[in-house]
Amino acid sequence: MTQSQQLRKLAARSATAFLLAALCVFPLYIDKFSNLGVVKFTGICTLSWAFALWLGALACVGARPDQGRLPWKADPALWALGAVTVSGVVSTVLSLSPGASFWGLGGYYGGCMMVLFTAAGYLAVRAFAPQKILNGLTFCVGVTTALVTVLYVLNIFNIDLIGTYVDTAVVERAQFFSTLGQKNFCSGFMAFALPLVFYAFLVARGPRHTVFYGIPAFFGGLALAVVDAEGLMLGVGVAALVLICQKNFTTRTLRRLAVIGTFFFFHAGWMQYMRTHVYTQGGKPMLAALGHVAQRGFVVCLVVWAALYFGLRGRELPLYRPGRVLAGGIVAGAAVLTLLANCVPGFPSLGRLDDVLIFNDNWGTYRGTAWRITVESWLAQPVWRKLLGVGPGMMHTAVADWAGAGITDRMKTFYAAHNEYLELLLTTGAAGLAVWLWFVIAHLRRAAQNWLRPGVAPVTLALVSYLAHAVISIRVSMIFPEIMLLFALLQVFCLPEQGDTAAEKAPAKHGKKAKPDVPADHHGLARQWLPPILAAVVMMAVCGAVSRVIFGFLY
Image (cartoon, rainbow, N blue to C red; front, top):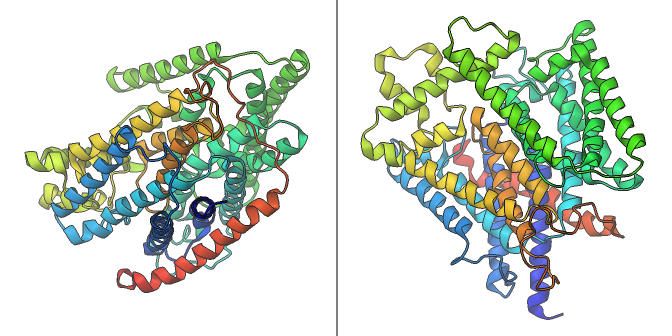
C-alpha cells in the first residue's frame, strides 16, 4: 500500500468518525440552559472545523479524493454550494447588524458562521466519506434515536435526569427535552433520523438483521407517538408518500410498514392510557389522537401483515402503481380540502383538521402570525434588500422596524419565521432563497437518477422529510449541520461503487436491475466500527470543552 493510499484510508476513517460524531453523538450533547443555545452552536462549530481542517491537512500531504468526488466543472451541486456560501457572506456584510448576523445572535445562531462551517463539513465528507458506511451509521443513528426518545418520555412523566432549569419562563415544561428548544430539537432530529431508521428495517433481510434494525424502529414508533410537533408528522408523512411511489415499493415493503404500524399503535395506546391515568406534562401531538383507536389500529396492521405474509407465501409483488394513485389522491384531497376550508364560506367543520386546513394568524400555535409578518416585512424592504436580504438572524429586528409603534406582544415573541423558506426570503433575500432551492434541487435530481444505488433511497427520504418539516420549523445549529452532511453523503452514495464495470457505472434507473439496498453481513463489525465510534465520542467531548475557550466571548 502506497503512502497516498494509506493517507486516503486514514481520511476515510476520519470522515466516518466525523459523521458519527455529528449525527449520533452531537444530538446527545446538551446543557442545562437550552438546546437552541450557544453551547450547541459552539460545540458543533468546533467539531466541524476540527475535522474539516484535519481532512484538509491530509489532502495537502497526499490524501487525494477519488475521481468523481469533487468535479468542480461538471457538478451543479458544487456550484450551488458556492452560491449559497456567497449569498450568506453577502447578506451578512449588508446586514442590519453584520456582527450579529455573522454569529447568528438574533436567530438561534444560524448565521454566516454556520453557513461557512457546514460548507466546509460538506466538502470534507463528500471528498473522503466511504461508500460502504450506511449500515453501521444507520444503526448508530438508531441507537441515538432510542436514547433521545426514552429521555423525552421520561420527561413527559416529569423525570428529569439533569436537574430543572433555573432561568425559564415556562416552569412546568422547564426540564430536559420538554422545553420549546428541546421539542424543536426532537422534532428536527426525528424528521431525518426516523426515515433512516425505518428504511433500514424495511429492507432488512433475515432474522438477525430484522431484529438488529427492528429494535431502533420500535423506539421510532414510540417517537411518532410522543414527540409534540406537527412538523414531524408532516416530514415523515411526505417521506412515506415519496416511498410508496418508487418502483421498489412492493408487498414486502408494505408488510414491514404494517409492522411499524403495530409499533406505533402499541405506543399510542400505552401513552393514551398514561395520559388518562397518570400525570404527564407537555403538549399532545396530533398523531397521539390515534391512541383512542389504538387497539383497532394495532389489529388492522397485524391483519395486513398476516395476510401478506401467509397469503403470498414469500412472493413479492410490485405496488408502486397503486402507491402512486394513493399518493396522488392524498395530495389532491389535501389541496381541495384546504381550498374549500379557506375559500368557501360556511364550509362544514372537519373537527381538529380545521386547525391544519384553515390558515390564519393562530395557525400552528401562531405560526400564521410569524409567516404574515415575515412576508409583510420583506415586502416593505427596498428593492435591493428584497434581493439580498436584511441579514441572517435579523428577522426580529426587521419586523420591529417594519411594525414600529404598532408591534404587538405576540410579534415580539418571534425571533424566527417558523418557516425556513420564508426566513431565507427575508434574511438572505430572493437571491438567497433561489440559490438554496438550486442546491436542494441539484441533489434531489441526482438522487432520482440513482435511486436504486445502495444508500441513496434512505438518505433521500431523510432529506425529503427534513425539507417538508422545514415548512413549519426553524433552521438552527443543532440540526442544520447534520442535514448538510446528509446532502454530502447523498452525493457519495450516488457515485458508482469502486470496482463497478463500465456497464454498471451508468446511473441506476427505475426498474433496471441493481444491487439490492439491504444491510450487508460483514464479519468483524465490532472491530470495524468500535474505533470510529470511540473517536467520535472523544472528539465531541474534546471539542465541546475547547469550544468554551475558543468561543468564550459568546457565553
